Amino acid sequence: MENILLILNIIIGLIIVVLILTQGGGAGLGSAWGGGGETFQTRRGIEKWTLRLTAALIIAFFVISVANLLT
Image (cartoon, rainbow, N blue to C red; front, side, top):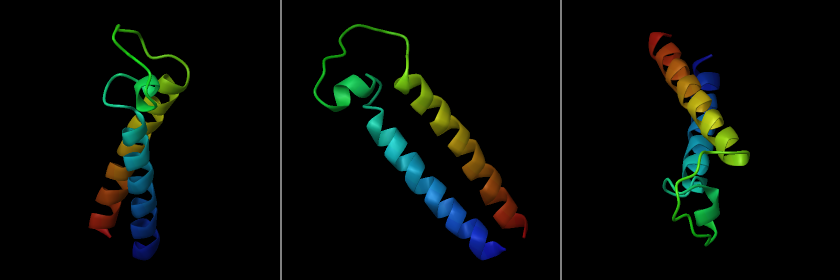
């Protein structure tokens, strides 16, 4: 059981890193590939989905880490 939790934690951690890197430092996904993000805009579409997925995975990572600590 511990091995499964460790492997799952590693996979979720790698996905979190990739999602954070694709968010483009606060300017959104447009700036990650050279687009200008000079004006403030609300997150829409894939940016909103990426943010929510990242938050959910961070919570899952925390829960799995605590479960692994207690086993």
